[in-house]
Amino acid sequence: MKIHEYQAAALFSAYGVRVPEGGPASTPAEAEAVARTLQSGPFVVKAQVHSGGRGKAGGVKFANTPEEAAQKAGEILGMTLVTKQTGPQGRVVQKVLVSRAVNIAREYYLSLTVDGTRERVVLIASPAGGMEIEETAKTSPEKIFTQEIDPYLGMTGYQAREMGKKLGLSAAEVKQFIPLCKNLYRLFTEKDCSLVEINPLAVDGAGDLIAADAKVNFDDNALFRHADVAAMRDPNEEDAREAEAAKYDLNYIGLDGDIGCMVNGAGLAMATMDIIQSFGGSPANFLDVGGSATAEKVAGAFSILLADSKVRCIFINIFGGIMRCDVIAEGVVEAARKLAVKVPLVVRLEGTNAEAGKAILAGSGLNIVAAADMADGAEKACRLVKGASA
Ligand code: ADP
Ligand code: MG
Image 1 (cartoon, rainbow, N blue to C red):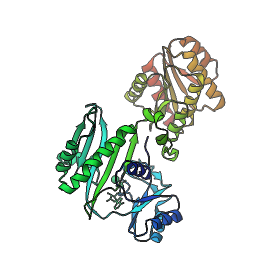
Image 2 (cartoon, rainbow, N blue to C red):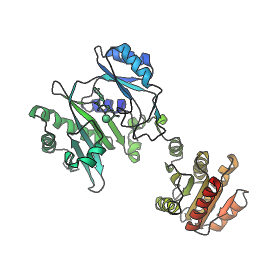
Image 3 (cartoon, helix red, strand yellow):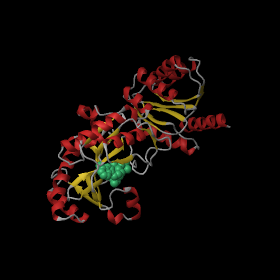
Image 4 (cartoon, protein in one colour):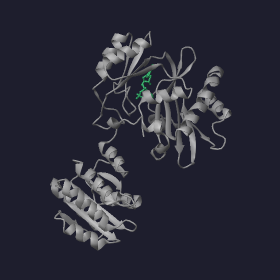
């Protein structure tokens, strides 16, 4: 799960990581009021969307007075921000963060994330901060330093000190850098984060280290033990299909294609996406309905596929082991009764109660194309979609 910069900045503050003072605003008047609480300018007004690259896209503007902060907020609020990370459709800005502008002397990159290969949390830092770290990784990888953190020892002072030296920080700056790294690591582990990122970590004119940007992502599988984190969820920022799927506790990821997939088991779901691609098609989603889905859950899943206007064909690929094919069929028919099904369904049912499942679907009056096996189903789904667009 992602949160906004203003929320991440509040978490940083709670963990002793210095951020510019400020607060969120949803209207120009609110932005002006926030600026007034900061007393003197200059201020910065920043679009709050779950995406980086806001600066380059025009989502970060400076202001000298509270009135000007209101004006800049008026320009940013409501705009559709298209950044490298939002995709071409962009994101509509509904909130801004008004904060004190830092007098930035230097900008660094600093983050903590999980390196799956090393099975460790890693500290990543670079003196090439502010700009896109992905570009630096490509063009000058020698400017990016990483340090594995031992889960037993945690972030040690010497590791942070070494990193500070590699960044070229002065002795006085390293003194601030060590507790900064330790505090970030505490936040990372206590809140079950998947990413904590500061880009840029600013050194101001007085030699103080300040997080001028704040990004925190959380491990969804650990949200159940962090009610405070879950409460920061912003449904406006989420894929509507994924938000709906979360209600049914479904393992669903929205994609850009036009073949809706309903599959049981994550492995089979991935194989289904692969085989659709290999026949020249494009999946609209990843969906694992799980091993023990009820008819209601299946109906919920099916209605999400149907509500997706990009979906032009649905491929149901079920291998019934623990999951019974008749339960899947009942769920599909239940959802189909409530919602108009305008797209063809390609169905491959195999395993437990497959015949009963096929009989339920055959008797439902739905437009069903039977598939002999998985490859046959994928090929038929791809052909139906191509035929529809021809
Ligand atoms: P994004 O990463 O989405 O582009 P940032 O928060 O990093 O957004 O802002 C972009 C740039 O704007 C930063 O690299 C920094 O130079 C400048 N900036 C952001 N916040 C402040 C601030 N509080 N004071 C001064 N400059 C800032
Ligand atoms: Mg940034």
